[in-house]
Image (tube, one colour):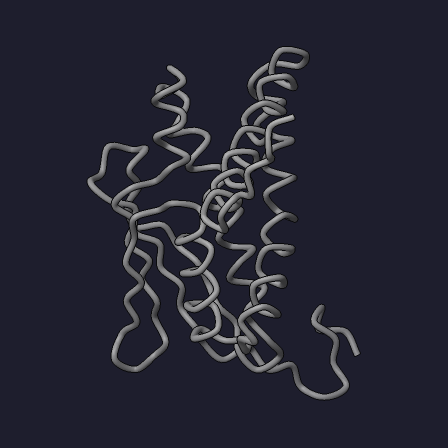
Amino acid sequence: MEKVKNLTDAEKAEYFRKSYTSVDGLWFMKVEELFGFDEALKIDRLVWSIFPKIQARTLRTMLKADKGIEGLARCISAKHSVEGFDFEAKMDEDGRLLRLIISKCPWHELLVRSGREPLSERVGTTICNVEYATWAEEFGDGARRISFSLESQICKGDGVCTFCFEESEAPRIPEGRHSSGAL
């Protein structure tokens, strides 16, 4: 019997990255075969409203990152590095606005390679909005909230994706009142 080769850490990371992207696309295509594209996208949206919570919490623990925009910047940069994005994370001078500028998106490239580029805009717009809004929510806390907006997207023909995360003070609810305004 031939000696089994031990994988390097880089090979292990590539194996799991490829498995992760493959299973994401495979389950989508199987749901699409059974129920159609619109239903598959609806289910994908539900998955990507939860999965980023797991990613964010895992990376926050691993990186010992705090909540807030700085913790978000550290963790989301780690996520994008691991997933094979080409990107730059830029924080404004007052430390309240994070711009994530993506010049290469592996998810868009995967759709292009698989001949599904015409669907990329719908998938990208739907999933990126829910995924990154969830990341923003995960790094807000009682005193601060982080909002998310998309300024540009590769899948819409722009040269880069520009994702903006802005930290602000959370609205204060007067004591004795509930968020609905009732006493």
